[in-house]
Image (cartoon, rainbow, N blue to C red; front, side):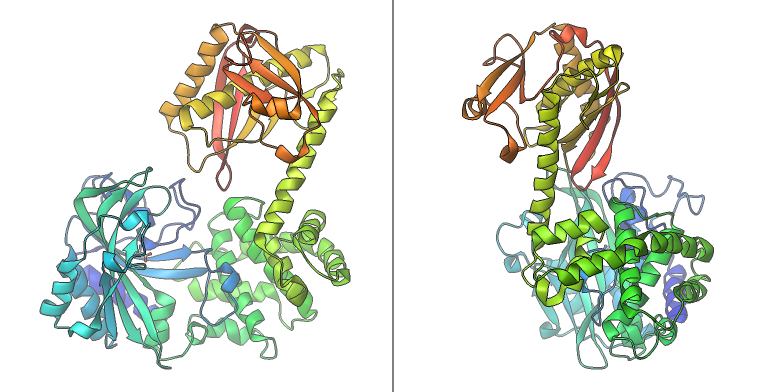
Amino acid sequence: MSSDEIRKRFLEYFEKRGHIIVPSSSLIPDDPSVLLTTAGMQQFKPYYGELDPMTTVHPSIGRPVGENVASVQRCFRTSDIDEVGDESHLTFFEMLGNFSFGGYFKKEAIRYGYDFVVNEMKLPIEYVTIFDPARVPGGDWRKEGVPFDQESYDIWKNEIGLSEEKIKREGVDNFWGPTGNEGPCGPTTELYVRSVDGKDIEVWNIVFNEFYCDKNRKLMRLKTPGVDTGMGLERLAMVVQKVPTIFETDLFVPLMAFIPEAMPTDRKLIFADHARGSAFLISDGVRPSNKEAGYILRRLLRRIIVHMYLEQNPGFDFRKLFETVVRNYKDFYPELDHETTVSVFEEENRKFRKTIANGLRELKKMPLVDGKSAFRLYETFGIPYEIIKELSDDKGKNLRREDFDKEFKRHQEISRAGQERKFGGHGLLLDTGELKAGNEEELKKVTRLHTATHLLHQALRDVLGNSVRQMGSDITVERTRFDYTLDRKMTPEEIKKVEAIVDEKVSAGLPVSFKELPLREAEKTGALHFFKAKYPSLVKVYYIGDSIEKAYSKEFCGGPHVNNTAEIGRVKILKDEASSAGVRRIRAAVD
Ligand code: SER
């Protein structure tokens, strides 16, 4: 049975049973708490408790979806990105799923799952798993207080008639969600079938969304529990088509046929996976960049480019591989866009090839690759860490991501400290990287913004907690830009609170002063300083308030600052956006 046929049979099966068929949503979700669409439920997440599926118009079908829906969703997961190249890991995949938002629950969901696999796909069930908290190692917050899923056990045993030994109690993998910081989640039951070479393959994950997990990781029972199921098309095709790996299914054969036989297998698999993934990401509007989805795309493209480079004469034209991807999928995913995919690829190729040769030459010269040298390659040539790791082979045996990250941070600290030292000069022409001013008037403005930034920093900590740390700042005549750690978006209420606190401190007309102290003494004042390693032996502590002990804000800082907060004027938050993983970027202006 072809993959086209499997998709069709799946959707027809559920349509006949009262499900509305909803087209796949984009790989870039509307939900700001997640980067990419990783499961079919993503576009339906609000229907589990937030929005009414009976009355909310769904944008892609132009009417409410109702209680029961089914879809084939394009998905992208980065968790296995480094494993791509072996015989089973993928970044891009498709997920078949049926969903219910208060319509049906465990009994029907399990029956449908069983019936479709056994009677439609003609695959005997090897065994199933159900959730048992006794199998969960201690300390997993998600599963605390979640009971054994007796109901699913009884359904499998009594209604379906599976023997007891085919119903396995599991913990770790049998609880799903939430995606992002909060959302629906619950126990799962999984269906396993045997592959042609005797491996047990999980084909279907049926999630019972009984809970809502809030931002504080508290589980609450959902008023209307729901069903969320996911079956990976590639794996299903592998067992249905009785081939030992996903790369031998009809989803990959046309791509693999295009790549010369003689190429090393891992390289072929990387090409095939990354060509699919990048064609879909680009068609969904992602462009290579250094952050978020753009960075993921860049990693895929650069990995392709490096491997093409290493292959010297790969014997095929990458544009044609994209063409094959588009041809294979266009019927089902009309949004696939060959021309854009090729032009984005070529642009990245042009840019990256220029530096690759130099970077690789450098890499060859290195006797060993450690965090430091890897960082240098990254900084000088733009070769992503993952590719350095991959290409350094034995030389990079001991290279660890943490070492690379440490080096990265150290580098940031050094440049920051350098800026602060420069700043001590108090010259009129300021361009420290952090503050920029060209004349007296501009200097006044950036100085007001600088003090405002200190207030903002403390106010953020007041509202969001002391785990908030400064990650960087940049001040121009127009605005201050401040990066800080937070793994979510601030709510509009929180933003208002922060503004109100800053306002209050401005209105209070607090004096702003500094003390120059030996590093140790300065540390003892409790002043904020996040760039430990690189301070000189004598540092300035700027504080806002009557005395350093009672100050509202204290920070290690080179200045300059206003003398009194009243000089700042009204501070307005203009924007708060994601900067990188776990880091937010706020922009604020003064009148
Ligand atoms: N959301 C679940 C999964 O991704 C079921 O669809 O496995």
